[in-house]
Amino acid sequence: MSKKIRVIVVDDSALVRSLLAEIINRQHDMECIGTAHDPLIAREMIREMNPDVITLDVEMPRMDGIDFLGRLMRLRPMPVVMVSTLTERGAEVTMKALELGAVDFVAKPRVGLASGLQDLAGQIVDKIRVAAVAHVHRMQRPVSASSKAGAAPAPAAATSLLGRLSTEKLIFIGASTGGTEAIKEILVQLPADCPAIVITQHMPPGFTTSFAARLNGLCQITVKEAVHGERILPGHAYIAPGGKQFSIQRSGANYVAVVDDGPPVNRHKPSVEVLFKSAAAVVGRNAFGIMLTGMGADGASAMREMRDAGSYNYVQDEASCIVFGMPREAIAKGAADEVLPLNQIAPALITRLRGSTDRAHHRI
Image (tube, rainbow, N blue to C red; front, side):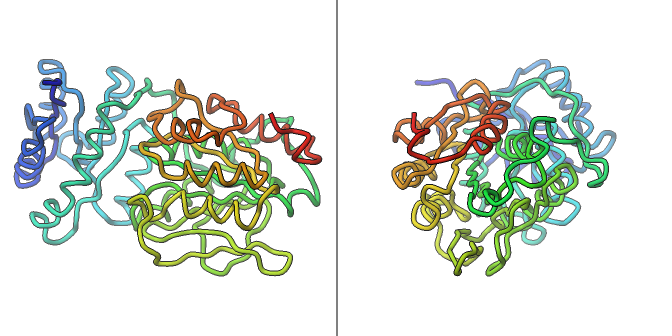
């Protein structure tokens, strides 16, 4: 029998601790080896019991979850799944937690806590399983959100791109677990006049607004949630709203956003498959595809369709991924033109955009 995933639950609510422990212990492949009602107790338990994963509440007595997470990821990096409240402040704090190194998060319901957590049981244990195999890196000093005026400049080589080319090209990004920081790593390197970027990051409703706002404060480009029917403009990045499907269609000479309440695809809503299929069908050789860290195979088949339609595709390499699932599947499908470390994707894209002529001359 394979070793069970050993989990410690950290939450100041006795009810939440009990419910999460029960959900975990129902699984054949995991066990709750302890619970703690504050981070100071959790710290001792982690030292003594050496868990595989911890679930961590955001708001707790004596030391809040964010302070504790920051110390943990500097001193003893390990997989953490945050348990957040579905509020505007909860969403902002969750984005901070992901920046500090949390693998993923679960949004606990504001009402009907007991029944709501039971409804989320499948999602909770799936995230714990993913966290258990995630590549957790020691936290570097995070970039702090700032005003546009104070945003870190793009590399000098990327200060200006492409004039008319920026209106013709479109960059498509798909990501899941670990993707919020991977997307940030790419977007902060892009200059203000880069082609439009459209992004699907697996994320529930209520969190993508904060995600977009956080990125908008860090990047030279404008970052926002996608709105149905809006024109897709150069120098802008558009993020699929949580709980909606996002795709692109053409209207005359322009690309426009399609945001709708379509069904889940590959169990996801938003789904990378939906966005990338529209790239293959509508944008063709004017598309660039980027597949980043994430569990599963969402978007891999559609990314191959993009390549067959003439796009040029970058896939994140295993060493720099939190979870290599989606990139691995894209590579297996033959969807990748280049497999690169995360920090090399934006420079490679900029170089190719600068020297872009006929797509056929650049096929590797």
